[in-house]
Length: 241
Image (cartoon, rainbow, N blue to C red; front, side, top):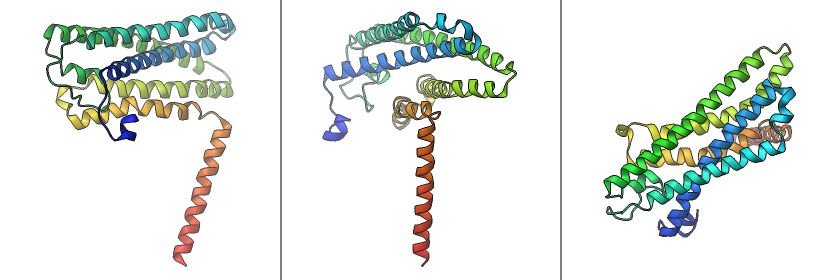
């Protein structure tokens, strides 16, 4: 945002370090929190009588601390290792932010490069474990919902889960496509588009997805759409006259 406002593409070394750390930290912590939220929904739907015990304030504080701690540890490891690499390919990052894969392209140390690749593989395995946990939780949730005799209860359970499921799907699909696509599909323009897709789109859509269940927001959107439709019809009538 600062670069856009001041019409510059430069970033300081310290700024690049901070940006990389915060990006990895927040992405990792968000994924951990999404995993915890799947457990919260599992406890609420599959074990409603034990929900108060399973998700009391102490358990919530412990899980939140674990999520932020995991994100911080992951960010420290990746940031420290990435910026310990000797850079011999210039100082121009071919991206609109300090992205680790683009920084690795500037490295000239094969052993340090492989060490960072190893850290990335470990992180992917941890994220895959979280993904499996989310899938297993939702399998149990859907089995419990389908056994509910009340249609209203099933609707309420599905409406509780769908926003979270939509956010997880958006987060996972964009992240997986950005990092696991084959090298044959890599090009500067595509890399830039994919980076925008996974770094900008999910945070932008998250508030909207989670607010879909808010009746006041739905009424405001409906009113805005009806007003725009009325304005368009009025404009067309004036043009016709």
